[in-house]
Image (cartoon, rainbow, N blue to C red):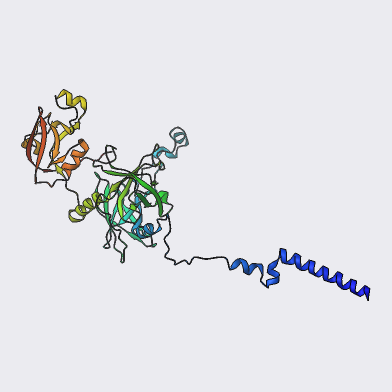
Length: 388
């Protein structure tokens, strides 16, 4: 009897010890739950259609603008070179190489554009479609179609194309002069031909001039990556509204990649040019027929004017032009056009160009330390020779 009691006590002690160990290390076994079910019940999954705002995301603006940005493919037939009759002579080829071999492959180019109207008008850069024999537009929804050129304006580097397709997504223009330094912007285009791409940056500056890119300059500068193939694409705000047309980048090598300095033509300028091209096929600008140079402190002092005088110094007046008939003289300093101040020669050029040919304008000039006003009938800016 005593032996049975000892056996029972030992068994009970072992069972209690085992129960203590299990309860300490794996309590889930005593509760009847598997470890997998305990983990799964703690996971929370956000539904894909959740309307919760995404902090730091610009996806809504990109989603709105991207369908209106297109890829543009152009080709230009290369004039075949006549094969030299001595090219079959191995001695001739040894000394003169293969330079005279005929070229049969067409040159190709790529860029971007922005659909600005449901009727099929597209804004892009003039240099994207310059001298193109064939233009094809690829939409974000994979549709491809031939395009025709409505008109170009090389002096602002803008062009308008037309395509015929139903249900076209048109971009929304931002408010005039809506770009402010520090605003977040998105650049949308087809860099290096890899496909539609969105890059992000800020507005680095506005009103950039004297860059030597176009005749008429008033660029938005941004550090959003703009690369070859982005030309003609959209620069939009975080809401997807068009701020400008991407045009050029600063790069140390021709055709190089972005260094964080890109330039876009303001949407307000692009809209004005586009409307004139659609209505008349070209852009008409004001002109008075003068040559100018920058006003400096030294020049102001030599003319006995205050050193702070700002404007454009008239260095030449062409005979028989509106300026000549209006009484403008060499040595005058143009300081205002219709009450708008002239700060430099670039500002003067833009203010005069914005005037309607045939209209009358009031020019305020400094002449021998005196300020006078002259009425001038604006002429039409002549077509400028193409820069090679």
